[in-house]
Structures are given as C-alpha cells and as structure tokens.
Length: 119
Length: 107
Image (cartoon, rainbow over all chains, first blue to last red; front, side, top):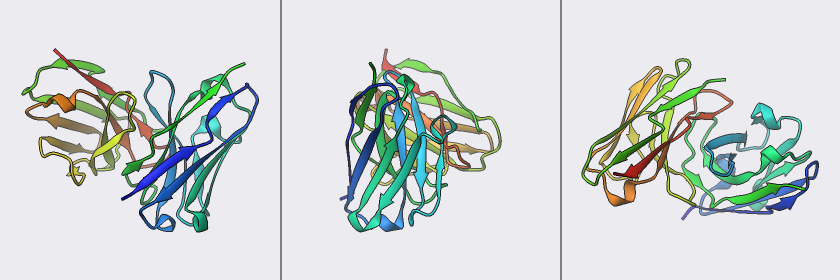
C-alpha cells in the first residue's frame, strides 16, 4: 500500500533553516510528481511546491520562492524540502503528497509534520 | 493566480441530510477541479477528481459536478463520518490553489 512518511520538522528560530524529508513506499516513486502542501494552525491548505518525476522541473508558490528548494532522490524513494530564511508565517503542518502530473489531484498524503518558527 | 472561492464557509446539518458545497474559480479551469475531505488532526483525503470522478473507495453518496468556473460537491444521506472540512482545489495551472474550506458541523 502507498505510504508517505514525513520527518525533520521541529522548532526553529526566525531566519533559520530546516530540511524536511518524505519517505515513500508502495508505489514506483520515479513515476510520480510529488508536492509539498502546508496548513498553518487553524487555517486552510496551501500548496507549496511540486517536482516532476525525474526531478528536472520544479515550481513554487510565490511566498517561498528563493527560500525553499524541493528535491528528490529516486534511488532512495525520498522527497525533500530545504527551507531557509524561515519566517513566523511558515509555521504549519507540512504534508508531502503524490500527484501523477502537475495537473493531477493529490491522491495520497503523508500524515504531516509540524514546523514551528518562533524565537 | 487562480482564486478558489468556496461557499458556505460552514454549515450545520443532520445525519441523513443532503449537503451541497459550491466552489467558484476566478477563471476557467475546464474540469481540473478536485475535492478533499479533512477530518480534525488528519491529512486530507481525495474524494473527487476531474470535477466529477469518484476516487476509488469513496462512498457513492459523494458526487461532484460542474465545469468552467462553477463546481459543486454534493453529499446525500449525510453520515456521522462525513462531519469534516471540505476543500476544493484547482489543478489547471500553478500555483495550485485551494478554496478556503467548508466545515460541515452537526446541527
């Protein structure tokens, strides 16, 4: 069965960095686009970034462009999100999600990992 | 960016009711509209994709319709498990965007 398990979250000071990981299993990871979606406490869902199946194409929401970098290691079935210059407004639960292409729905989601940016 | 507007933001209903949630896109998105259910403290779950296609395993009491800019999620015979928050999402173009959510509460 498809499983997505995020790790790497925690408390970080404003201006700091954090790298999230998502371990995938139960499907051919290299066949799928992957995304990060976040949810601030008590708020709605916000797509953050996606990466193509080969890793050659990425896209970001404007608010994280230049600060966050999405990447993947298809040999290790892993997705990453490197977050730098973190701000209080980046505080959220971050989900990794699978999508077949950039125009597909998110058909499987991880359980989410909390990132808190606070001094 | 494509703005997604959901209404209502919340509603009260009883088990057995029929519930309708609407989602409007700020520009034509063809049929690239998806619906998700999120229970408290849980990850979202895909219910309907491409506006009207039921995801595998999702009960048939959920249905979706619409095209262009206006879309609807309907839940017939509301069940206790259905009290949750529902989000629409457009996958027509990046940045991918979600509606603000509709919370279905117990009357």
